Structures are given as structure tokens and as C-alpha cells.
Image 1 (cartoon, rainbow, N blue to C red):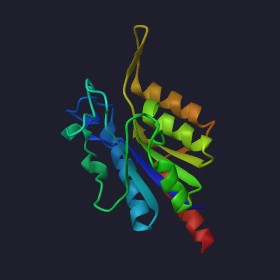
Image 2 (cartoon, rainbow, N blue to C red; image 1 turned 45 degrees about the vertical axis):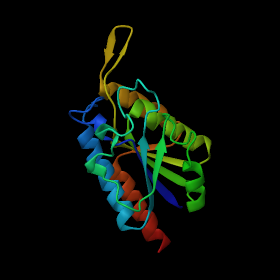
Image 3 (cartoon, rainbow, N blue to C red; image 1 turned 90 degrees about the horizontal axis):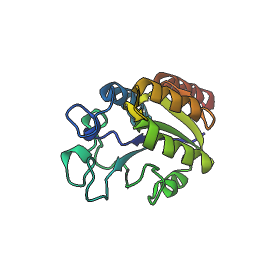
Image 4 (cartoon, rainbow, N blue to C red; image 1 turned 90 degrees about the vertical axis):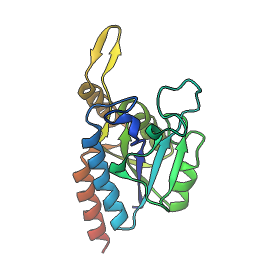
Length: 189
């Protein structure tokens, strides 16, 4: 089955010193990097997705700022495809769907940030478009949220969204994704 890797919004503003620091983004970024390297080494289709805010009063991912740049942990290499988006759903008003169709992708592996926003919105849209969905949960990160005066820890936010996304596809670790892709490749000969 043709598989494509989506590396969503692993950008500097989400890391230490950034304008929207997440919980453990470097650890998640390193897991995403292991998947990215797997796809690079085996000629797999992969795409970086970069959020650029259109709002003039945006607090992060402002066009032209260092914080909107892709973080070095999953550095974008010259010549690799990149999709620029302005909404949580990576398919909305972008060429991502056309790109995936052109590649003949039937499955997408999702990594990225934030779990409760762009990862969730993109995963649900991918499933709606008919892609088989694998989410590398340890290659995603989020932050603490607040609701009605209650702080919801990032770990709980992440787990709640991953639990819900199991209705749309398979949620596994990055290592499990790599192992399953290797097994498929071996079976195909």
C-alpha cells in the first residue's frame, strides 16, 4: 500500500523559547525525525506542512519570523515538498490532497503538533478523504489546556485525542509504524 508521511507544524514557536511552547516537543520531534529518516532512506513520499498565520494580530507562526520556521529536529531539505497552510486542517485551501493523489497514496502516517488542533483536524480530514490513517502518537505533542478554570494537563489532552482518533485509524508508536512498514516491504518482496 502506498504510504505518505505528513510532518505537521514542527516549528520553532512550539519549542523552548518559542511563543507557544508545548510540553515535550523535542522528544516528539525526535520521534518524527526517525520516521522522516525512514521515509527519506527508503524513497517514501513525505511532506512538511508549515503553518503561517494570516491574522495580523497573531501571537505565533507570524510570517517572516524565526518562530514560524520548521525546527531543526525535522529540518526541511531543499527539494522536499512543503505545504503552507493557514488553518488547523492541513487539507483546507492547500494542495495537499492533490499531492497525495498524484503520489497514489492510500495511507497517511501523521506526526506533528499540536495534537488537539492541527494533528486532530488533519487526521479526521484524511480519513474523510478515504485515506487509511496511522498516527504516530509519540511523534506528536500538545500543551496544557484550560476549561472553565480547570487546567487539563498536556498528557491528558494528548491521550484523550489519541483515544478519539482510534475511531478514524490506527494509533501506534513511531517504532511500531517503522516495524509495520518494514514488514509490508518484506512481504512485497
